[in-house]
Length: 124
Image (tube, rainbow, N blue to C red; front, top):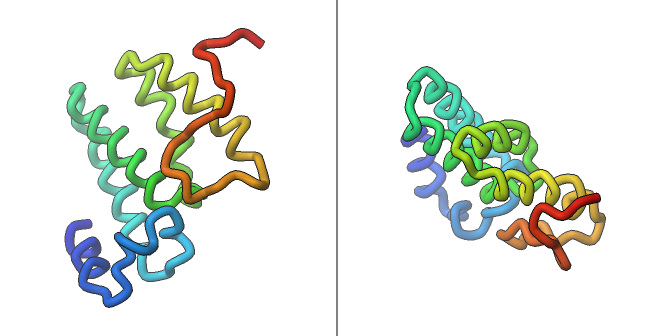
């Protein structure tokens, strides 16, 4: 993964500066994104809280790099948040993907997972 990251950083287009949020659309970044998933999978064999946190951090960085989540990181995030006792954050994350992500006018360049008018753990 580190070698692929360095190759991307050495690339004249500097994808880590200008491509953030749309990595999957930039073909040379795909092996790097797949390597990030492989890294996360390898961490599952380490059974401690630090590993779970590292997995979550890796997946959240994947989502920052590729907002459209072409590699399915969002499917793994909620379980890790629950394991880390981050229930509210998990709820917010799930609600964002169920509502805002489906909005055709959503600004995919926005690095936050903000939901306008959102109330914490609301019913209904």
